[in-house]
Length: 80
Image 1: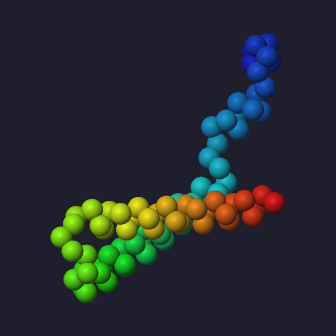
Image 2: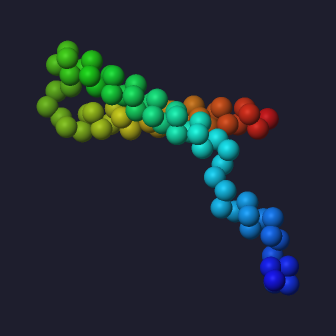
């Protein structure tokens, strides 16, 4: 039926698969957020955060984004 419509069944199966590096990316995100939480905890103990509530969120976003960038480099190295 799919072949009659001009579709390739193999392409349709691979369309919905998760990338093989999903576990790597998820682990790096969790690790990056953990590092961010440690940084926030240290800054809270030193009273260095100030009065802004956005600073901890920004630290978590930067650490999570950095983890994704590192994951991208690792994934590109595995492909080459």
